[in-house]
Image 1 (cartoon, rainbow, N blue to C red):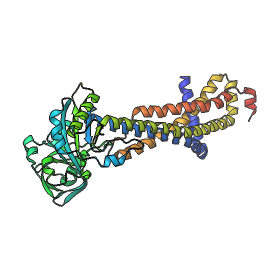
Image 2: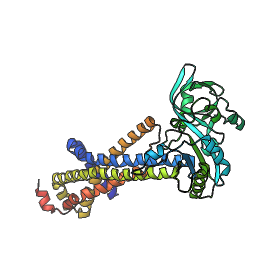
Image 3: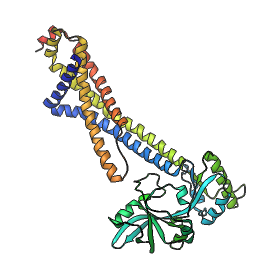
Length: 416
């Protein structure tokens, strides 16, 4: 009970210091607040972005890869003039590749036509992606249809004017109407909606923006847009069989594509096999650098804040020297005095840390709504913020607290 009372009194002294010397205390707590704010904000952002990347990789699968004209990552001095002269990946390449792959579970060919306007009566949505894909698209690229259905194989091969639309497009065009069976217009073509994709939110590794996409059969889109244009990003996407290492799948794809392109052993590749895991690993490395930067920047702020807390505690000891003398004359042990000021120092840091955490929480809520991405501050980051506050409070308050505990009671009483 005596220690609980001690903690209560120490917090009371901390709040009293904040009340009596508002400006001094707030300026001293500012360093702690900014430090915690910086560190926890960056940790929260990095955790959210890493989670988004992992979700994207899980969505596509760790054994997924793309065959494209351009590599997904470039070296420091990459020969761009070689890449720009490469031929595009074509539907003919896909038709030759598909039956020859032994390690692939499924493969698909698709193109993405960006910046399209989708219209329905007087409503329109701009900035949509129109994806023209072969029937196997849903076997390789995972998405969930919440309303309606996917194309049948007959519909896909026949190139019917059917569309599966994203949640954002459905909301923007149809409001409270059921989209299924309605006719929309994209790129000058009329399409009948047969399905709506589940709302996914923003994605960092977005090879197709699900919420703003219009998926149509490839045999339909090739009659509407130029499928041989580099601007329309033709891809072959495939997924390796379970249990087969991704490097083995990549090796087979590489070998078959060289054969299809009739490249001699001395000729360089005129295509790129891009693994999604490679980009994910690069993004993770970038996030690790951001984490370190956050700790360094926040660390300097916390260091300044620690000196500010130490200054407050020295002033507090000076102002309460007489009280310390009375406490010691009545039998208070040195440890009791030491603990009293340490708890007060920690309490001040916790106040600064709590303000920083509150600001991060408000920012995360705003960012989640504005960017359509989950930036929730998890419990681990909250514990980290509280832990840092306790450590800084202990370190900053130890010397003032120790000084107070060593005061001679007679001299302390006379100080007044």
